[in-house]
Length: 341
Image 1: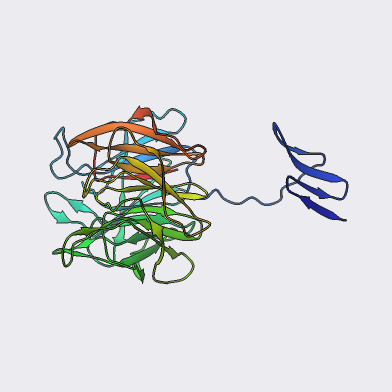
Image 2 (image 1 turned 30 degrees about the vertical axis):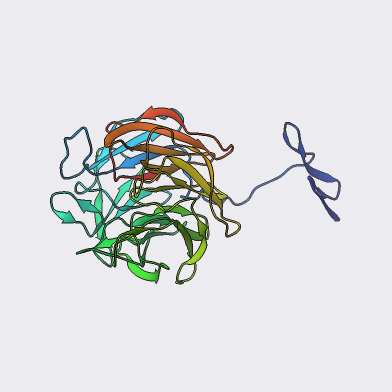
């Protein structure tokens, strides 16, 4: 049977699959025998704002332990659905198809937190379970996810040194994370994005020998234990609560608090190693938790001018525009993270 391919159609014998103004047309029948599981990189039903540090208005001096859930369909918080095992923020966040994970973190009363947590997306009124620890005690790590593993990269280790470790742990079993590779440069408070094949780090801070910020974007492969390589650069150097989003084709950098507050949205392609370009503005704040859906990402909560905010803002992956407010979290939070189901 002859196969003919044109710029907008595929012909197999007498059958044609083609693009038309209202969608896709096919004059035959397609039968599916196997289906791929939805990737955990992009949520389809809901986002989560997880944990966080103290922010105005005050009330949680050690950090915020609760996990907020908001359906993508409404953007309005469903309230607290559970809690981490202890109050903390500044941790890496990873998502599998069924669970959310946090790696390490910081408690503003007791200090560094080395443990990893896991919580279910499908239930409520839970306390996250402890499933092991990270290979090196540190906070300010950046979480990325492949379909089968979670990764925690960089961070600040005691007493004050930035780490270049890339840790990995499996979603299939509950176990400690192990260092499997290194970043080009040790740093913390970077933004993170994930394609199906690579994890991406954006910006960040280095504290040794002096405190500096970078605009570097680098990536590491999920399938091999290799040092990260340069992809490009953000439009300016920044770190401290810089957040990331992942569409199916691009990585996004949201905001950043230091060395100066930034409210811009930038994106770069996964298909080629290019620098980021500015595509819009968060409008309301400079630090936030990133949550990735299929056609849009969400910036949940954050801080502006020293005050915590509850807003959930939607960033379209289809058009390059400013974010829109679609709802609110239960409580203002900073130094928190986002998960997607």
